[in-house]
Image 1: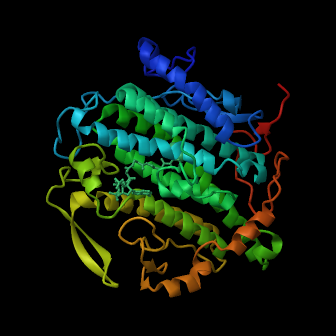
Image 2: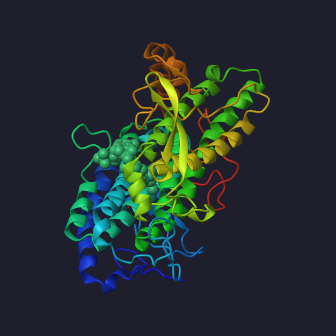
Image 3: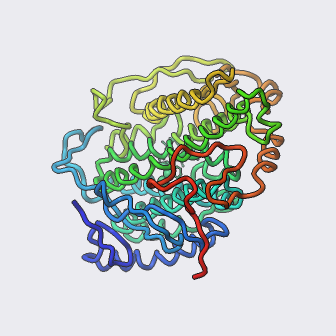
Length: 470
Ligand code: BYC
Ligand code: FE
Ligand code: FE
């Protein structure tokens, strides 16, 4: 079991103090990170004490230590999951050979690009969520928001460690650039589309942590299969933290539905009571689910084929597949051509983005089933829209589909847009019910049910976030 060197400036289980050059490089990057956190992290709560979970080691006991921390003093560290002895390459052309502890020259650019893309999403999400504290529905939810934020900060550290350790000077430059791009900025946007969308109300936050963090789960599962062992081990540890982010999202939406269902069963209209009605929840689901589908890249992708062949990025749970080389298989999908959908056979390796998206969609289906339990007896149910609906990346982008996946005209789409996706009126309504934060311990905004239990065995009315003069 690897213990973490907590006495060091940067907590780590990678024996950082034995590599002075790397340690200096990271200690140089650390103040830049903190400056970024102060400028772009949660607005207005940097001096508050937050009841946070900190990883102090990677074993089951050590990775979840709870206590009050001011966020800028959070101990962002570098943790890799323990190595798997004699691990071999699990897929692609080099199947069965030993994994790499260093970056092979011919894969340097592709690996750097994958790591930078992954790393870029982490600070982006913190930037997207930075104003939410001012409209929180409770201290419990406020604390969960900040837990997600500090851990996304740690995920950035995880990728920066790889860049600094294995990519020399260009790695250090990329690490700096990760602190310079800004979500939604016209000149220096974040790399992937979804991470430039505003996420400034709590329904969006819960949908984001359900669907976009779940994309993170699947991308990390795919990278955890990588032949580049340090990347694999970084991602395996990140996945343990990701589970909580998805919990925050799924239970957040679940509690909104529970509140709506309570009112519906009493014969009341949720909107008349200042709560959120189910059709609106469906529109936000449609929006964030489809934006998250975009994050898997194109349905037909030579990049994906190359990543798979070279052993850089696999499928989720690669061991569950029979054929790890995937050289001969085909994947059948429908793509738009001349105004209609045409069935095409795609070489399996070129369809790897879609294969990963399939695993993701199945997982999302289960979430929706669990949400629908809250709605039993109300006459409402939520559904996932077709993966063709409202896409901005890949084969379906530039075409118009209804939520059932039928090809329609742009006019038809525009006419029904506000029934399918969040409208200006929806956003204004959410602003009106969320304009004031709830800071009293144990109290909850009227639009959301309390959770069944608190965090770390603490009661629901625990003071999860507090202000103490320093
Ligand atoms: N937006 O061959 P294609 C997370 C670009 S989330 C903008 O179709 P490929 C988290 C693409 O770069 C997980 N551009 O796709 C969650 C390429 O550009 P070039 C993040 C896009 O290359 C919540 C071109 O289009 N992890 O952790 O297979 C909170 C054609 O690309 C998009 C990763 O993404 C897009 N959506 O890329 C916090 C893992 N999609 O080459 C954190 C690392 C595609 O023509 N990244 N493009 O200039 C990858 O595995 C892959 O790069 C992609 C798919 C998944 C992005
Ligand atoms: Fe993350
Ligand atoms: Fe996350």
